[in-house]
Length: 330
Image (tube, rainbow, N blue to C red; front, side, top):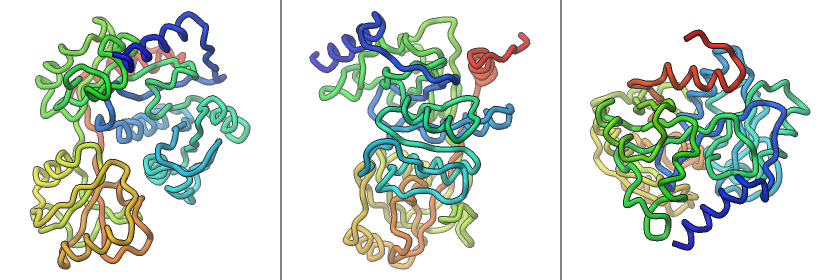
C-alpha cells in the first residue's frame, strides 16, 4: 500500500506541475513497463532504433545504466565501434551500443542532462528512453508500455507483495502498449484485456524470434546450430524463459545454470560453468555475454533474438510517427 501510494503521489505531483519535468528540444519516445524486469525492453529498443533509422531519423538512446559503478553522464558509445565497459555503463546499454553501430548510447541519472550532452556533439532527431516509464523527470512525446504475455500484471500488487513498480491503473498513462513474448496474437489479445489500458490507443503483439548463436563479434558461431548439444547459463529476471527458448529453437541442452538478474560473474562462477559444461559449447544471452571477461575459461556464444510483430505494428508505428511530427496518410 505504501509503495503504491508513493507511486500515485509522484504521478499526481508531476501532473499538477508541483514536480517539474525537463524537456529536451527533440522528441522523446520512452519504452518501459509496470513490472520488475522480464518484458523484453532491450530487444524492443533495438527494433525501434533500427526502424527509426530506416525511416530517416537520427536516433540516440538514453539509459539509466542499471548496475553501473559510475556517476553522472557516461558515453557508452558515440556510434563508433568502440564502447565503454559494463562496470562503467551497465550491461544493457553496452549491448545496445554493440548491436546498434552508428547510434549514440549514453547513460546518466538525469536523462535530460545526458540528452543535452548528446545534442552538443550530434544532430539527433529523436531520443529513445530505455526503461523510462517511471522516469517522470523528463517529458516524453510517446510512452510505450510493454507487458509480458506469460506473466501479465501478475497478482496486480506493487512490490514487495507483487512484481509491479506502479499500480495497474497507471497503464492509462501510456500512449501505446505492446504485449510481448506472445505465442500467438490471440494469447496477446487475451492478456491485453486484463490491462486497464484505454480503448482507442494503439496496442500491438510481438514475440522474440531466435536468430542463431553468435560470438562476441556478433558473427554466427561455427558448428553450433539447431540440433547441437549445448550447455547454457543466464542471469535474467526469468531464466526459465531463456531455457525454454533454446529448447523450442531446437537446441539440445545437456545442462543449465541460472544466476540472478544482472549477475556480475566472478572467477568461481566461470570455473563452475567450465567444469559443468564438460567441453560442450556454452551458450548464454547477449546481455550475459557482455558481462563476461574477454578471456573466460570456455568458448562462449549467445542466442540472438529479434522482435517480430504478430499484429498491431502498423497502427503503433503510425502513432509514433505522428507524435514525432510526421504526417502519415490514413
